[in-house]
Image 1: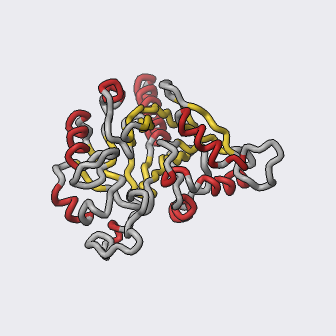
Image 2: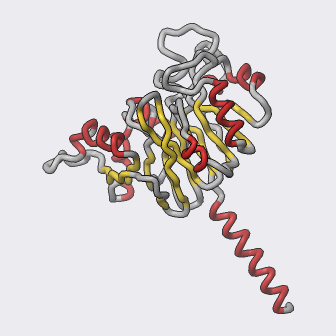
Image 3: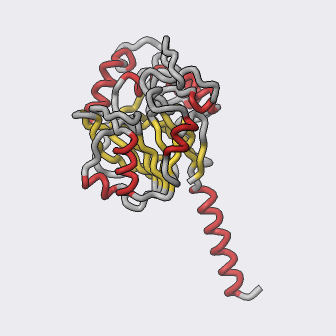
Amino acid sequence: MHKESFLLLYQCLALMSFLYICIMKLTFLGTGTSQGIPVLTCKCEVCLSDDFRDKRLRTSALISTESTTIVIDAGPDFRAQMLKADVQKLDAVFLTHAHHDHVSGMDDVRAYNYKQKMPVSVYGNHECLSHVSRYYDYAFEEDKYPGVPEFDLKELDKQPVTIGDIQILPIPVLHGKLPILGYRFGPLAYITDASYISSSSLQLLEGVEVLVINALRHKEHHSHFNFQQALDIIQIIHPKNSFLTHLSHMAETHIEIVDSMPRGVTPAYDGLSIEV
């Protein structure tokens, strides 16, 4: 084999190996609001739907490669979501904010503490982590009970962090008046519970190919994007594909949302996995 041919083959194999290692998978663990769907006692069309895509746990997502596993938010359905997705290793939890439906399942991180024999790193902004340390005060006591979860709280600023082979860039957004975080993972961005994205944060989203964004319902809400507001953001960022999450039972059935959305915009559903 000529030297030039060998070099070309080596470069192609190296590129293929790099692409294989760096392929990310996003799995939607939950795509519903704080009450989930069906909502207790509700008899609306969505809550009574037989379509499995209309059964929604509280919003959460799994970002994974061959070697790295990251969870975004750990709400009250965290244990069930980890079991269903068969998550055997957890490298970090990235929290968007500290509302109950995003952090109240974190006690079950203890299973990964036992298996991995180390604390699990938990990332978030200052306000979020302060709430976590109060909410789970028993995990931070000096003379703590054996077996409580172990968290290594890591406050985020504007700088990206790297977990294994995944680089994560925090994206500041607002949830009503509350500063929260979205996250960018290379060509993928994940934003939930947002109602406002500043021009500086929109700049951080330039070039995103896959955008996950919350879209509560048709009617406006004081602290969440509705459908039209989410579509307006999608038009600005102009990704190849967009997925709507944090959907309310007031947002129509899955199939009705599909029929009403423009090309390239899809309502996510629990269990949906995409490769980026």
